[in-house]
Length: 202
Image 1 (tube, rainbow, N blue to C red):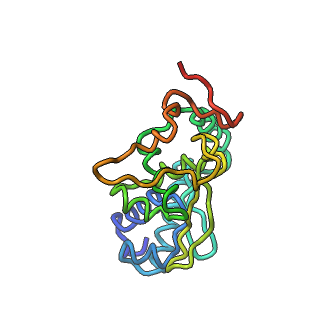
Image 2: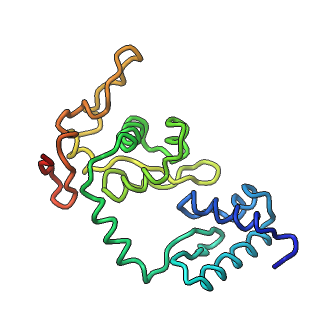
């Protein structure tokens, strides 16, 4: 191990990649943890070596000039099974908040969503993409080329809308409406994404 690389440096790189859940440019990563790019490469090498030695399910992938924490391919069947179990669960309040933010402001980035909500929303966004309610729109022409998200046709079906234009106007502070009030039946039903319809949950 390079004597300039400390356990804290390695842990910092690991923490950032874990929290982002998406590819992170090496320069952005270096700036985030206050290291140079060569030190980042060493940290990634050390982490992957550690994962391999401990037979961990994790691996850090190199994607051109970016890195992403992922799970090894041999564990994909277990992950797929877990996601299929989650597909038909009721939407949480956090999920409804994210859907409202995206629906009224799309296309938007995770950073925008998190700025509005004031909390990390990466896992919520990823779950909504998995459920087919949000989708990747592409990268915006902004510094860092951030990935943006929009609602899907399935989102419209689930909330009884024929188009985004049918969304009600944003209410004033004194007359706020909960997002699920667009269709009051949403809370009483599960979203069955395989059949693209609602199934009674009672």
